[in-house]
Amino acid sequence: MRPTPPSPRAVLGDIPAYVPKPPRPPATGTSHRLYLNENPYPPLPSALARISWAAAQTNLYPGIFPERLTDAVARKLDVPLEHVLTGPGSVGIYQQIGQAMLSPGDEVVYAWPSFEAFPIVVRMAGAVPVEVPLSDETHDLEAMAAALTPRTTMVLLCEPNNPTGTAVGAAELKRFLDRVPSHVLVVLDEAYFEFSRSPDAPDGVELHRDRPNLVVLRTFSKAYGLAGLRVGYGVAHPEIAAALRKCAVPCGVSRIAEEAALAALDAEDELFEQVERVIGERERLRAALGEQGWVLPPSETNFLWLPLGERSVPVAAELERGGLLVRCFPGTGLRITVGSPAANDQLIAALAGLTSAR
Ligand code: PMP
Image (cartoon, rainbow, N blue to C red; front, side, top):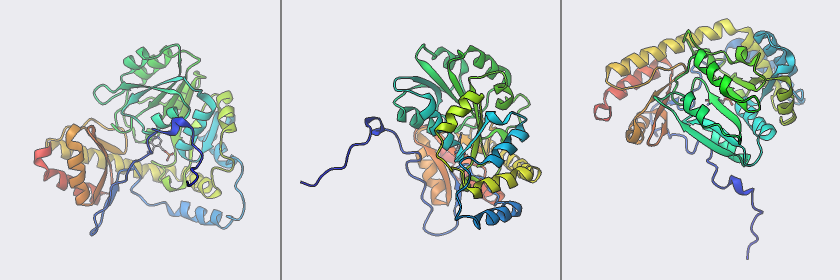
């Protein structure tokens, strides 16, 4: 008999893979990646110049932590240095949160559908997911508060929410945070913060100043266009930040990623002009699809949500055939990244042809 390999931890058994199967581009013709909420603009020349400068030092380890970047983020946000941590993307920081803050049997409350990393982080730790359905595609903070029990140790909140693009107002969020007991850690994921134009949008960094149980996560992957380099940051009470640093992969942010992120911070004006263009395209897309009869919630992100229920799979397949690769949540909806103007034009034309699916 052939020997079998050792067994992984039992909790890993039914944990879903992050993205089960990426959409497949058609064999011929161009296709557009509209399934990962990437920035449609290529990196700025200033970032590329610093990337190549850093690449020339690839024989050297980066710092255990990217100190210059951490310092630059602290200065940008006007928070003390000890409150800031950086990591290999916000998903890297989620893993640190799971390791540092969750024990088997802890209950973790989060909305569903929301960021797909949530159930993975929770179940990986042997903790218990408590999923609260969205209401009108938005966080139902009343129901989430009602779901807290004495066993709850963490709340995960993605605001604006992935995959629906919706957001709650600052006052509503504050009321919710005030109801969460101080021993419960609230992780507020603001990956799409820069795309929000609601005058009432919460600012997690401001909220964290007098809430020691709030961790805010942001990323260089979306508005800053550096998804390929894996760099994100968190802002937290210094004791929480210190605990999370203990669980970091040493040297987890490469020198290339650090330099590119520093260059991006220096070029915020230019990058935020691109964000304005993405927001303009988002609103153009939403208006055009609305005119065609598609029902879609407002978005505060760089993607749109089409809640198509059972029609999601056939519509995604049809779009895929035409080279429009979108993220399908079977039985629920489609998440479609705002792409280049050309990709968006193609999407408008393709959806106009799918009259029976509306
Ligand atoms: N949080 C949310 C809500 C996201 O949608 C994503 C990316 N899809 C991430 C975090 C991951 O960001 P990063 O690239 O920084 O790991």
